[in-house]
Amino acid sequence: MWALRGDTSWPQTQRSAAHAARSSPGVRAGTVFVLPLRTPTSQSAEQLCGCHSRHVCGRPLYYRQGQSREDAIPTANMVLQKLHAWSQENGLAINPSKREAAWFTLSTHTESDYDREGKWPLVVAGCQIPVMTMGASRTTKLLGMDLDPRLTLNAAASKQCAATSQRISQLRCIAHKEAGPSPNDLRTFVIGHGASKLRYGSELIWAVATDSAKNEMQKTYATLARIVSGVPSTADPESALLEANMPPLHVLCLRAALHI
Image (cartoon, rainbow, N blue to C red; front, top):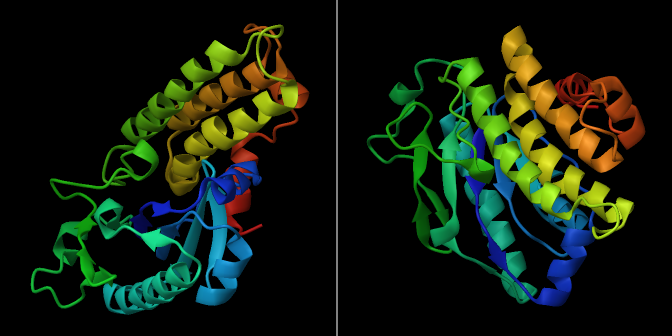
């Protein structure tokens, strides 16, 4: 999977529209080019670049399939060139210094994929974006999570749960029924900034995760459901998910794998 993370500067009026958009978590497993970019409308950029999009933590991810570095890098450069031109036409700006890219694969030989001769540079606005290989000494942390698949799956699941726990701590500060936000606002925050962070990493490893790793992720997901539904912490996970109107985590992961 090719993944590129970055920020785009644009006016506050347009920024609020993006935050109001519904969040759809996760990315598909496989070899894909991923481009997180804040834009006024996801559909416009999709039509422009020929990419598909999904939302993770309120940020659109635009991705294109690529079977190898030789295939993915030219495609990524083409997408970046179109987005850069489109951004300039619409008064936006892509900041290359705030972008990072990584090569994702379930193979244990990713270090050998390193482009030592620099044959395939990733470039936007005349600036080269460094591409890190998974398993190297320095890796990217998309959405604040280390997605190195060469970690043991239990360790990877623990990192995702820990990242989600930070969101849970924030949620507990605003989840008071009397002093907190409206139930709909709280639900939006949970799904957009809590559950999506957990599911983003879960979908990548679910098919090959151990039972203990799956249980840990499901327990964290159930905690989010209890917060948004307002049920006691002693409530069973099934009741919490039902009250919160949230599908089970394994169903969402399977849907992503099947591209539903």
